Image 1 (cartoon, rainbow, N blue to C red):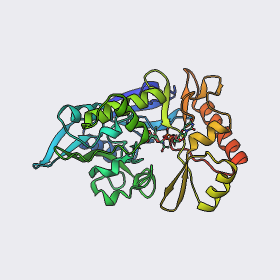
Image 2 (cartoon, rainbow, N blue to C red):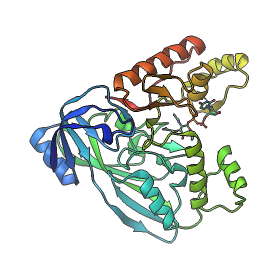
Image 3 (cartoon, rainbow, N blue to C red):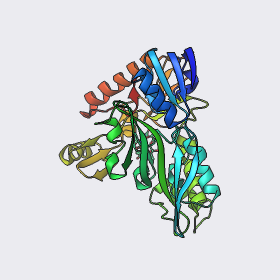
Length: 335
Ligand code: EPU
């Protein structure tokens, strides 16, 4: 375990927020996590890829950075391969690695920032695929008592950008490994998303491989979403809200071009559309702003504090509530 004192977390969160950890401790294996917990109890903050959080203050106490690596084939037959991944493996690097071996399953989830261990927490999803569609197992360590656990897919209680790790187990467990199922043949390609179809058409590909889909997704994401290495951000800052069909109907009568998606339990609205219509797209206050190409993404132009981003988020939430009667919720974890 490596321990660093009064260490800035700026490079360890994709928002690039400059807050400090009193002690930053790097854990490289499940045993190191267990050792830490047995000697120190729960840390103030567990840090994965730092891609889905907004730091609003310095962290007093310990930040435990999960830096567990490893990519291991744990099952294989003629059709599929199960791969066990360390929580600290960078998600997109793993996606590219699987594609280079002709494996399918992760292609729609290309270029999502963050690490493998963070992926189950919010059930990452994009272009019609969610992690839950390929996840076999999550392994980790419970904080109290400090002991290992294993959850299968159902045990993770996945929902839209949601899981047991955001609810009953919030703050109670550390993910150390995930296992995903990938296809070797008969890839179950998901091309329903309109933008993917048009990218494939543009490239004149009519029998796409997982790699072709990934290339299309990368193109779409690069055209709309800021690269955290260039402009600090945490992907979608807000969840797309689900409202009752009555409310959706009332809104549709006033805003006939509003995008809606039927989901179980109601109608999902596009938060990005609501925020754009409310006039916030491209808005900037100091170094905190709303991305100019995707209103769902808040950005840090350099030196924004977590508080400045949060104040902007609250202003947007209040304004959308006032104008549309819809309550937006942050998707990122506020620390
Ligand atoms: N829209 C606007 N203005 C905007 C943004 C979106 O009008 O500024 C409209 C679009 O034109 C479209 C609708 O809203 O009609 C939906 O937009 P889009 O397809 O871009 O997807 P999204 O709902 O904005 C979600 C995910 C993204 C994911 C994409 C693609 C959430 C919170 N976000 O965004 O995930 O990449 O779909 O599947 O569900 C993330 O979670 O970090 C993330 C980027």
